[in-house]
Amino acid sequence: MVGLLGATAALPALAQFRVEVTGVGLTQLPIAIAPFRGDAAAPQKIAAIVQADLERSGQFRAIDAAGAALDESSRPDMAPWRQKTADSLAVGSVTRLADGRWDVRFRLWDVVRGQDLGGQSYAVTAADLRLAAHRIADFIYEKLTGDKGIFSTRLAYVTKAANRYNLWVADSDGENAQSALASAEPIISPAWSVSGAQIAYVSFESRKPVVYVHDVSTGRRRLIANFRGSNSAPAWSPDGRTLAVTLSRDGGSQLYTIDANGGEPRRLTQSAGIDTEPVYSPDGRSIYFVSDRGGAPQIYRMAAAGGTPERVTFTGAYNISPAVSPDGRWLAYISRVNGVFKLYLMELGGGGTATAITDTTADESPSFAPNGRLIVYATRQNGREALMTTTLDGKIKARLAGQGGDIREPDWGPFQK
Amino acid sequence: MTMKRMFAVLAVAAALAGCSSVKLDDVPVEDKSGTAVAPPGAGGAGGGQSSVAPVVTDTAAGSLAGPANVSRIIYFDYDSNAIKPEYQAAIEAHARFLKAANGRRVSIEGHTDERGGREYNLALGQRRSEAVRRALGLLGVPDSQIEAVSFGKEKPAAPGSDEASWAQNRRAEIVYR
Image (cartoon, each protein chain N blue to C red):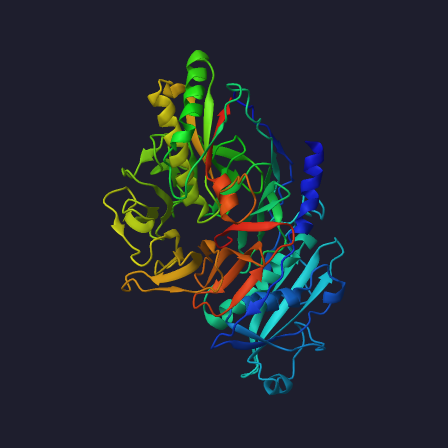
């Protein structure tokens, strides 16, 4: 056991990710991010992290700023940046403090107006340098698009390597992964709590699927559903008080709700078919789920307290894994068409027209970013499982591809407080 | 037999304060003040505010002995949970064994091939394990001796992505506890 712990602590190096942006969006804001003064001596390259974040969003186009010697206290001459067609310019510095922490500062300039758009400073440990970079990207994103940035949020995902399973908590770019759970048996369906402090998931460590709620900063975990038969598909209600789960305790796979602190489940569905993969609508009033009550798996919606479901997907004979955007406007799901599994997006209440937004063939498990502008999903590329992010129009995709085995089951965490 | 679960928890000092954020407009740029944070290296991943405490699970045991010379695996056709006639003799042998040894418990583990979603396959595997449970029940095995569970597509017996592998993966395993 002690040996295993040592191995786990050394594992994060396995989960290195690379961003590959493919496709071009139509309207992208041109921004120059100058190398931060001190970047070369710092353990993380702040400017590069900020630039990759902004590019992955699909809403920014990076203008080459190599060689620029600027920091947050500079009064930059805007003429050369205007010439390079940059609309904005980010400058900053990273400095080691006497106590070993790092001081990260930056300022954002409106190149067109020659105006200071503000800046921030962060004093952080080396471990939080990436977080500081993501916060800078969030600041820039919000200033320039008006939407909240999601770069400082976290992803959960699962890897399988050499028959070991790991549940990871990583930065939104997939990097900086830390193991929350290591097991010889599968782990599936991680779901962040509303606060971002806990993850519910299904673990097979006792040779059956059981639902846990796991506090990521302490490692403390609670058994939420360990009833006779299979326990799976946890989904948090938006108020954080209730989990919807799939249980087979009464035969078949049916939906139940359980208090987030545990307790007796309450049955929500009564069908002869499979009912599974519940997700709450953002207002908490409805639950979307998958059912084959009509003969093939389709997505349905019903009141959160149960009741008569209405069918939501009508195209195709295999529609699973619903995810609802934070504004409740979009439904992302996986559809099997001609034997391949693709991520589809459908506008809810928009007449039911769905569009495939990937060109891969084994897509799984979509999850929206908390600002609703990106979807993370699992797929296969070159024979390996990989994670991708995509914009809702499917035009900008980034691969969060690891080297440490197969990567799957992404869940995008909430905004950090 | 119930395996006792053990969780090894790496205690990590809680680093509550971390990324202090100060508007540059509000402070002189030379100011180096910030909120106190845990010293570097205090936590498992370097003491950041985003540190995660890793947990390692124990491993459960495999199957104990059941009836001698009887297969513990029942294979299914694609998209089917019907038990084929060729497995009837094996199911009858397990039923006789369980009725004779009425303290023994079995777990029926349903499995699917790799195609499709993980949770939906978990539910399909559950249908297979429950089909075997029902067959044992019809032969007089008390429900209290049988638990039907599913692994979905998570534990394939054959690793390939072809029909020969898929056929080996669409199965229910009878596991003695």
